[in-house]
Amino acid sequence: MLTIAICDDQTASAEKLHRMIQSIRTDWNTDWKIIIFDSGTKLLDHITEIDIVFLDIEMPEIDGIETGKKIRQMNPECCIIMETAIVERFKEAFTIQAFRFITKPFKIDEIKEALQAVLQSTSDFNTIEVYRNRNKYQLEQREIKYIEAFNGYIICLCKDKLFRKDITLSQMELQLDSPKMKRISKKLIVNMDWIDDYNNGTITIGNREFIVPRRSRKQFEKDYIEYDLQFKRR
Image 1 (cartoon, rainbow, N blue to C red):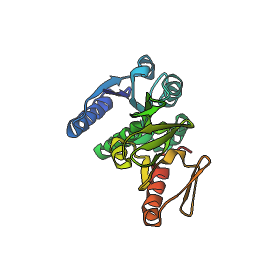
Image 2: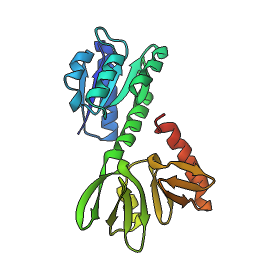
Image 3: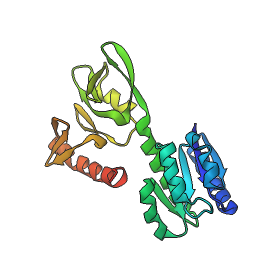
């Protein structure tokens, strides 16, 4: 179950955001646990249990930026969504790698977009079952660099090791839910995170080069630009 925290010292603001998230949870038919904290100190006492936090920048004692810095130390995988009525302070949130920014007063569409982006990002941690030397392994999708198809089986490159699964590439594609995994040809799926270079139809991943078929280039380049805007860390 996904655990979402709201950290805001203003009770009315926190409760309004709580109602909005509950409404989205109902619309999406998902099972989330939602917790409210009225201070950064109380949040940090439970931060290892939190997957997503809506964090107010303006708080007494320890503000959202300082709280965010401690979150990065204690639970690096936690997704931070910053909230504030002072847009100028958003710039400070880059220091804690905030995933999204939302403004007060809250807008339901903005909350939905932020949650949808987080859910797409966290799908990178979902695993697939593969084999190496007849031993079974669970690979996180984010660690897979590419998946290549052969006659009746696929090969995955992960941490410079090759893993095998007796399945077609189309069947494998159905098991993937990370938006960063893109099929570029009949025989190849690549993870956008691991592309070292793309130039004129050629993808470079490590010491391998892959040609994007001409009929697929326009769509791939569109997907690559969208990936760069939404996910790529700078």
